[in-house]
Amino acid sequence: MSRLAKIEGQVRGLQKMVGADTYCPDVVVQVASVTRALQEVAVGLLTDHLHNCVVNAARASETGGQAGLGEVASTIRQVIRL
Amino acid sequence: MSRLAKIEGQVRGLQKMVGADTYCPDVVVQVASVTRALQEVAVGLLTDHLHNCVVNAARASETGGQAGLGEVASTIRQVIRL
Amino acid sequence: MSRLAKIEGQVRGLQKMVGADTYCPDVVVQVASVTRALQEVAVGLLTDHLHNCVVNAARASETGGQAGLGEVASTIRQVIRL
Amino acid sequence: MSRLAKIEGQVRGLQKMVGADTYCPDVVVQVASVTRALQEVAVGLLTDHLHNCVVNAARASETGGQAGLGEVASTIRQVIRL
View (cartoon, rainbow over the protein chains, first blue to last red):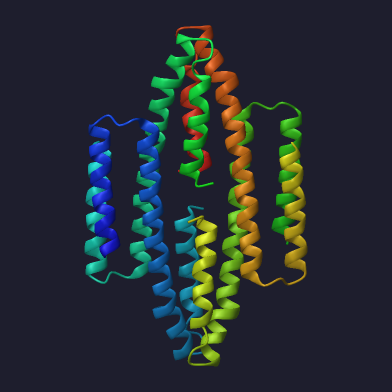
């Protein structure tokens, strides 16, 4: 949550940079930094999910855990953008 | 500018999703979509920069344009995250 | 394995394209396609690993599975290049 | 060219790693490294192209250079995978 609040601030900062006609490459570097911060959030969410759902499901039943893995794979693919 | 305002709204939406304990993979898919939107902004800025700076500099002088290309390459590398 | 053999062939094809002075943007599009194929391999390996190691470890013991998750997270970060 | 030859060797190395049942996360890290090497090739090709085509075209005529930029933008998008 606090990471996302910080990212929201960074996006507002980007708007100011564009509004102030900041030199393009400098804005692009800043955009890349926000992108990186968002992907950190995605990895954190994925890891929490693996922790809470897949591992626990694997403990709960013989087939549990497996079921969630297909979804995890497709989520990883979306983060990597395949 | 309007793209960035939309992205700011999307980041606020992400905070609501996390606050409402939305199912993790659904949030990750949304994070990936915001990342993509930011990279569209980066490509737009880079193209404007190539248009305004590199092409015009190439017209202005023999060595102009060249100078800016090293910077463009390094900016692309940051967007790709090399 | 067969995917990697195909990728090896694609990299050889890239060398031929460059040797034949193929138009740069066409080569770049082909490079992007090989990159995508490699990331598919990475996702496949990661999913197998989650299946074989994390899920099974979670079944084997109370703390198993957890141990492997930190490593999975750091592997995902390397694939995303954070 | 020599970079691509090295990448071909790395892909052959990956096949050996998989054939020898190397620990999955170690193979994934290696896959990520080959992906990075390929993207370096893409950035190099793009920069050469900007140098040879866009800058020279901009010098040759009033509208030259501009024409190539749309293509460059779409090539960058493919490398970033938008």
